[in-house]
Amino acid sequence: MYTTLPNNIRVFYREAGSPSNPTILLLHGFPTSSNQYRNLIPLLSSKYHVLAPDLPGFGFTEVPAELNFKYTFANIAITIGSWLDVLKIQKFAVYVFDYGAPTGFRLALERPRAVTAIISQNGNAYEEGLSEGWNPIRAYWQDASPANRDALRAFLKPETTIWQYTHGVPDATRVSPDGYSLDNFYLARPGADEVQLDLFGDYKSNVALYPEFQAYFRKHKPPFLAVWGKNDPFFLPAGAEAFKRDMPNADVRFFDTGHFALETHCDEIAAAIRQFLDHRQVS
Image 1 (spheres, rainbow, N blue to C red):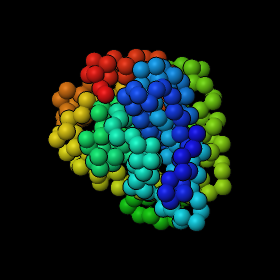
Image 2: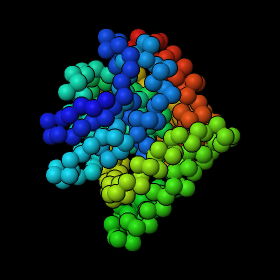
Image 3: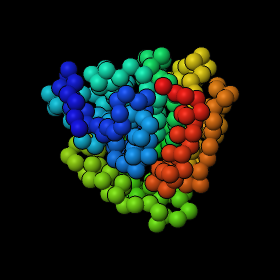
Image 4: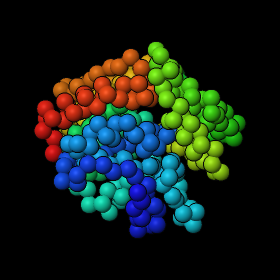
């Protein structure tokens, strides 16, 4: 369904479960959309009100051209915050993955009392969590030359999307083609490449905020669960372990899979989330 914001951005989102139940906000990553949560949503919606938006620049969310919207993580977080306000969502647990992590952590900085719990699935907030796979993007941060920008187009190729889904997965036949096929459809749309290249460049703003994210963790100590594909080529297990430095009670669990852990371990991760939230009686 869609909600239109005051600036006329139309946010597409998936919703399930009774609004009278505690809300879980699911924030997706690159290069996917709320479709990433197609299998998780029904496993949570019997006890929780589940919301999964498409971030601006992804999926079916529509950004009017006349807005001249600048694709930055700050603006993405502002947009999702505005969408939450329109829906009158005042409290929520948040599941963050990949790009969803800096989006969700920025929301937590802005409205710390709204966040009742955090589930991070390969959603990073520590330098030690960044692998060497980030080196081409780091080069663009240091020198935003046309050559360095153009080099990042390799991340947008269809075969790279498939690799992101299957790398580190012991049995790649468990990965349905649904996810990466839809992602490649989105990436092939006119202008999508430039949006994604802009976000690659702006990701450095998230790394700059890592100390603030960590200070939030130390001060507020939200109930925290990390469910991590341990073979992720971009976000290393050290990044998951680091959460315990700032939140000693963080629950960190590893799964023998890659970046898109839900593609192979959705049932196990859903069970971990339900156990985690039920035990803490998150409301």
